[in-house]
Image (cartoon, rainbow, N blue to C red):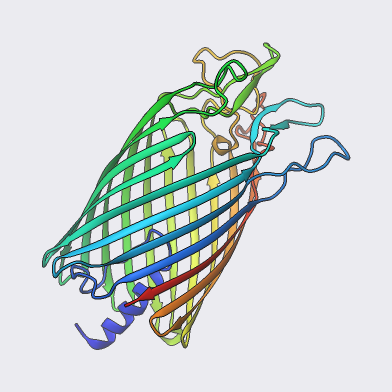
Length: 400
């Protein structure tokens, strides 16, 4: 391959890898990595306080989460490579439980006492390389005091056209177990033990269009079965004058289509990333996501501003609150199933120091509710429990 093309694609790939979950195929993609990598990320997530529904009352605090992530990866032989990720997370704060009707609009009822949670998660895998393909296998787990999960996945990549075309296929499944805290007479709506399962599959293609442009697309689907409700949330029913357990269908099928473009601008020594994602489920939820990022290289520095817009429709059975009992028995006032839009702005900076690279980023996320129906329907107003948050990340990458 021409030297200039290699240089442009290398710069394009480095910028692409700065976005989590995005790996762009390039020349030599079928080769085992020639270096080992250690990465550490320290993340602080903080939700903005929720305004009180009562005039003069204090704001209601929400979640603060601290996350430490560690990754190691590298070659094992001429045909094998390894990767392992460990995540340690601690969380404290309060969460919206349900919503009631009020004279001035919906009122959010919070969980009250501060919730303290910790989570330990990890996954590891091995990639097997040949001249024209790569096969990866990975095993993962997640442990909390009230939740555990184990997952297994596999992915296969085939390289064509001088490694300029890549076809990816992946599949996996997970088994989850829930043992909600405080279940029993004091909280009769909470189950003591539940299970859920999921299977997923994806198919994607990426193409090097020219020395500066890589285009990719993929589709994915997942099927969830079992207990899909939130054991800590409730829903208000006016005719009963009380809150009942959050209750959702025991199956959910989802579909997503992604389109990604990575373009390297020679004169600016920069890369522009543009992404679009369409997503829907058989619960009626549908969303569109658009993001645009610019990765500017300045000597050994790189700065990366990003803008992301998200718009979602509500689940069919979602309400802030309900007039009466539903025939299907489904109830949820979870704001994550409501109709809303959000804008997030992120700014990242990194610097290369020999074999080290230090990184930092700040993200601000704001959401706006909208009615779930074009005409007024009882309980389908915009959710008052939508979240705004900030997210700070410090990171370090070391190669050897």
